[in-house]
Amino acid sequence: MADDLITDPQGGMPRLLAIMARLRDPQTGCPWDIEQTFETIAPYTIEEAYEVADAIARADYADLEGELGDLLLQTVYHAQMGAEAGHFDFDSITRSISDKMVARHPHVFGNASRDKSAEQQTADWEKIKAAERGAKAQKRTLDGVAIGLPALTRAVKLQKRAARVGFDWPDTGHVIDKIKEEAAELVEARETLTQAAVAEEFGDLMFVVANLARHLDLDPEETLRAANAKFTRRFEAVEDALDRLGKTPADSDLTEMDALWDKVKIREKGP
Image 1 (cartoon, rainbow, N blue to C red):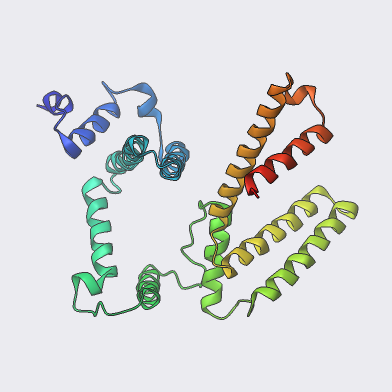
Image 2: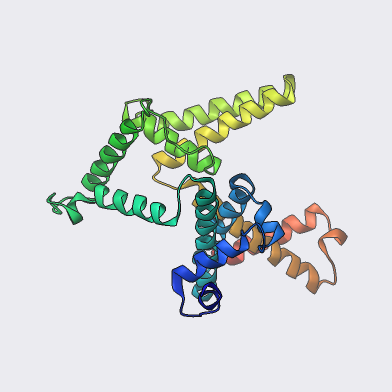
């Protein structure tokens, strides 16, 4: 029966769960899959989430379908390992998230009013999450902010938590002043201190830059991704210009490439 399910293209979620169970079977499974642990699979889970975001950014919905499948497989993988260790299984995972969504949306699944602004609903959501943290004995303000988040994203989440209890600069001007202060400290560290001290000062500067993004209502990860895309686009345009001259970047120098870069910028900005 299991083989019939595994080969059934209409098998849906039970088919995927059966496939993962077979892959992890100690006697007949895949040696690589059998060896994996939560720790070894976690990097793949993160990578698949980024690939989902990449497909969305490219508006490639055919690719997005496949990437969402890859991400779903990660959940199934962790669920199978959890079941083997007696921690949880796929059913308990789906039950947990379903219960959470119902509890966090009393205006949809309960008697609470839906006649609220987005800001009011966000405030209500945060109150519910705070109560959940309290039930988990997470008493400190910063408890529960995942360590594994991208650093810029985690910085903003930590700052938002601190801001809720009043630990925040009152306006953007104060943040910009702090950026200037941290930049000066970084220059001083570079000239007089150890590499470890330089790294610490650089981290401080990045943290305050993330805070500026928060005060400007920007997502620092998103803005940096956009900057990366812009750099890639412009550098490839420089490479194309060099190619038309019969050259590669290795055949060029900074002065020439910088001049071509400026031309690309002017062309992009238009008249």
